[in-house]
Length: 380
Image (cartoon, rainbow, N blue to C red; front, side, top):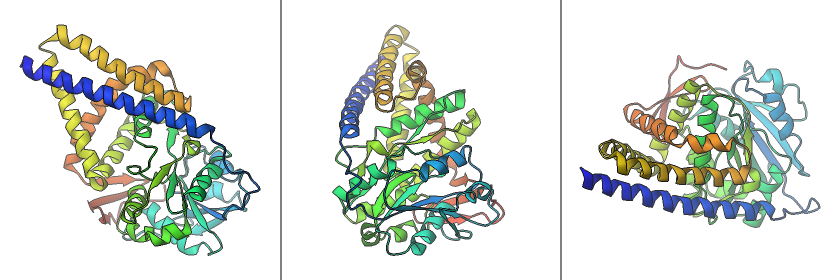
């Protein structure tokens, strides 16, 4: 038993140190890029269609929409896309006539959000040279679009992506969601080879979208993120991470809401990125086994556990140094709880393929095949 504990302790220490080095490299890259100047406003910027799929009445939707329409970008237009004219989001969206409203109709062979995007891309006139995508719960800084498009101007054959940061940490569920999500941020790399396109903050030129057949890769999928990412990889293209394109989400969530949200993220990862999901499951199995064996050797386990969690706290600190929004003490302390939640949720994803997202129930049969429960649809 002691030999097993020693072996697992070595694995935990090595993993903690290696990932700390990766997080520090990301922090240095983030700081360097955030200071890099964007192209000036007198540049011949491409005309951009900013596509915003909406479903239901998001908290702070009005404030979010105002931020989409206040971008410091010379030539763009916002397109709202909803499933039906009965969607509650129209209470807010109709207050902004400068944007164009599209009714996509119900999805049949893909997720509703993906369906909305495919309909919008077919609708947008050819005079728009690039597309940007934003989620309805995202609050954007005024230079968000400029930063994204600067990247695709510099690397026109590739895509550009930002990521989200949850700002509300006023209750337990919101804190766990913020810490959980922050760890995903540092999966991004400077080179872009292993990056994924996060659909709530992405830009791509029309020519790249068409040559990589992005709408085809969205067929039969619920995940716009992985569909776009797989299309780029299939075409031999990269996804470049843009630190200046971080989108903020300001709503709060209960503990049960966090668990449902994290479960959905992990289940979608299991279906669309099984290698990453299996790596996470394998590591968390080792982590639980380490704790279980460590209880038999508390004199050795307790200081080692404190050291490993201290390294986890250093990683949390480095992430906060990038975005500067969050309670440092709570970020440091929440690591073990996130590990426990992930362990339980990862095991849970083994036993179902059902996802409920914005009032619609989906059964994920494979990467490009799914069904929609006919009696589980709503405009909420």
